[in-house]
Length: 229
Image (cartoon, rainbow, N blue to C red; front, side, top):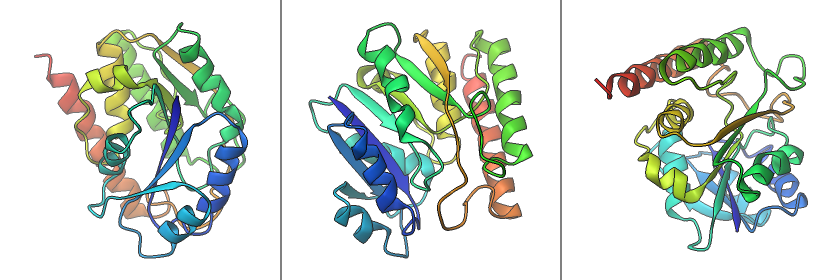
């Protein structure tokens, strides 16, 4: 059983179309939208589009993902994460889940930098951060990453064993670091990426958002790296 978790904060414009696009792949058995304290109609439109809805009023990307995990059906075997802004391409979901279903990998992450990107869909800071983070993780753990893309799939039991703790934007990096350190069978596949379908990015939409996200990702990197000392 495959479940999809979509953390969302004030994504009333794109969220319904994202859910429909995910459902159209006929891959997931359940789609869970985690409303992370939205002040618009995100929750209403997600429910109307047929998604299961979970409320996590305390904001934080990692908190939203963790709330979605807690709400998974007991039968769920594989968890897929993607953003609710319409920038990820659900038609690539089979490339994420098939290696896990086949038993050859435990964790598959999409790489926007290796796929086709719509102009303006990623800023220079995001591209450089993904490459810099990948370079550091190759030194620390021998893992090869080129991106910190939120579009990813992981075996549920493997995710449970990672012991994820990060509550903020460092969640994706923490998962990649812990997966590498735990010796999971990791695969990175190219995925296409689009500009968001509506609203404003909480990370790259403002200078403050970019700075805050960058600081939290760096703090996560240092915290996880120093845990082994």
